[in-house]
Image (cartoon, rainbow, N blue to C red; front, side, top):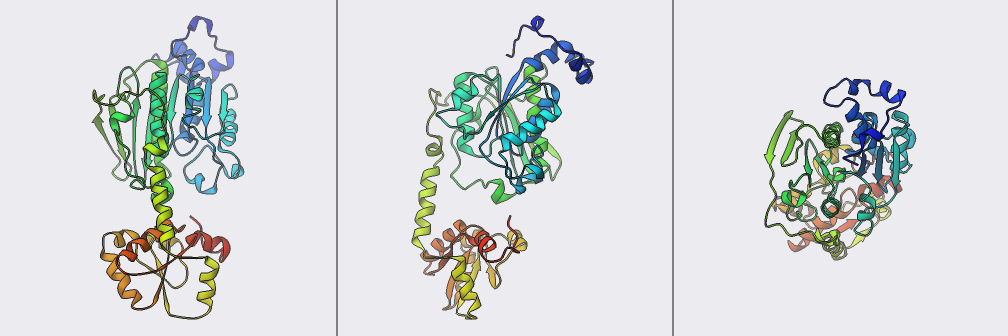
Length: 390
C-alpha cells in the first residue's frame, strides 16, 4: 500500500521508541514511519543480496516482508549470507531468515514461500506486495521477475554481484526502464559463471543489498531520487562507483504473458549439449581412479582442468594442471599432447562438467580420454575426506 490512508495508521509507544532516529529526520518523520509500517516488500532469494536487505528492511520498520526461496543453508553460504548462522546450517533458508528477522523486529509480518518461483506461481506470489526486490542469481529468474513485475505494475529493485563487482538499479518504476532494456537478450548459458564457479567477495553482496534496501525505503517514502533510469556499477577492488544512463527502448517487445524462461535463456539446450559432451567421452568412477593410482602403474596422465586457484585448494595426488580456458584457446591442447605422448589420458575437474567439455575439445584434436565422474568433489566424498570441498 504505497499510498495508505495515514490517518488510520497508529504508531505504538514501542514504535516511537524503536524508530526515534527515523522520526527526528524531517524526510521521514511520523508520516514516513507510518508508510514503512504499512508497506509490503517481497524479496526473491535469501542469499547474499537478500540477507542484508531483509535485515535492514525489518529494522527500518517495513510491516510485511515476503521471502521466496527453496534452498537450505549450507556452510559455504555463511561467508556472505549474514542472515543465516552456523546453528541454521541444513535448515530451510526462509525459516532461518524469519527467525533472524523476528529477533530484530517481532512486529514484522513475515510470509514464507518455500518454493521455486516460476511462470505458474509468480503472479500469485507477487501480486499482494507493493515492491519486489530481486535477490536472485540466474538469468531465467531475473527475466521472470521482471516480466511479472511489468504485468502487475510493481517496482522491481534489482541487484547483481560477481567476484568483486556489483550493480543495482530500479526497474519498472514511474515509467522507467525494465530489465529487458538492460538485457534485451540473455547471454549464452555458461558465459556468466555463478558465484559457485567464479567466486564472490563476501562483503560485496552486503554493499549491493544495502543499496537495494535504500532504494526500497525511498520508494516507500516517496522521496529522494531513485536509481530508476540509472545503472549503478560498483567495483570493490577500486572502491569506485560509476553510473550508466538507462532508458526505455521503444522497440522492446511488449510483455503480454509469462513464458518458459529456462527455454528463453537456452538452459535446456545447454544441458542437452553438456549431456551430449559427457556421453561422447567414456567415464570412470573415483573408485576406479583410486584402484588405478594404487596399482602403481605409470601408463596414464591424470589431467586437472580447473583454474590454478582451485588447484591450490585441493588436488588429487599425481594430477597435472592444464586449465580449461587454455584448452579452449588451443594453447592447452599442445600441452596435453606433450603430456600424453602415448599414455592414457584421464581428466577431472570440480564436478565432472568442465573435464567432459575439455575432453570433447581434445577429442576433436585427436586426443582420446576418460572423464572422472563427479570430479574432485566425488573424490572427497568417497575416497579421501581430508580433501577440502569448495
